[in-house]
Amino acid sequence: MTAAPELTVYIDVKSPYAYLAIGPTRKLAAEFGIVPVWKFYTLEIPDFLGAVETRNPHQWRRVLYSYMDARRLANQVGLTVRGPQKIFDSSIAHIGMLRAQDHGRFEPYIDRVFEHFWKRELEIEDPAVIASVLEEAGVPGADDFPEWAEDEGRRRHDEVLREAEELGVFGVPSYVFKDELFWGGDRLDMLRDRITEAVSS
Image (cartoon, rainbow, N blue to C red; front, top):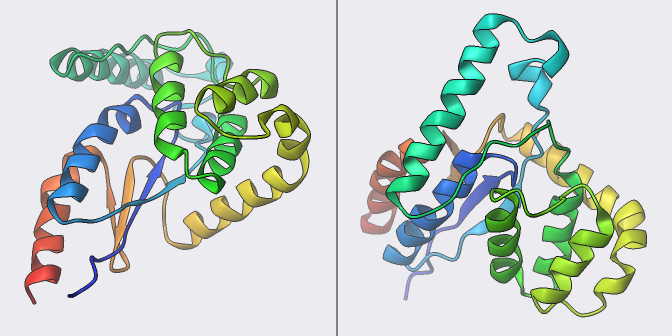
C-alpha cells in the first residue's frame, strides 16, 4: 500500500483565517487519508499591518475589512470570531502547542485555544493560563509548563520559525505539499488538485 503523502500546515492562533481553515483542512486531509503535520508560524502583525499607534488610514481599512470578512465566514459555519482588542504575542500558545504534540494531544489543545481566544475568553500570553489549557486537554505534567516555555520550549519555537521562513512561509494558513507552498484557506481547491495528482501518479 502506498503511504499517504505528507502535508504540513502552518497556523497562528491569533489569525481568524487560520481558525476558519482548521475544519476544511481536516476534511481535505481525511479525503486522502493524510495526517497533517501541524506547525505554527508566529506572525509579527506590525510587519504587515503596522503598529496600532502608527497605522495609516489604508492599513486601518485593511484591518477593519479583514475582521468583518472573518466574522462573515465564521457565521456561515457556526463559529464565533470577535476582533481582538490588542495585538497579541501568540508565541506562548504556540509553545503550548509543541507540548501538546509531544503527548499526542494536539487536537483537544488547539481546539480549546482557538475557540476560547476568538470568544475573548483566553489570555494566550499568560503561561499559567496556557498550562491550564494543557491540563484540560489531557497533557500530563502541565504544571511545569511556564518554566519549560522559557527554556526548551522557546528554543524549539524559534527553530520552527526559522524552518518555516526557510520554506518561504510568510502568512497563515499556509500549506507545504511536495515542496510547493500554498497560502490561504482559499487555496484548498488548488491544493486538492495537487494531492489528487500525486496520489494518482
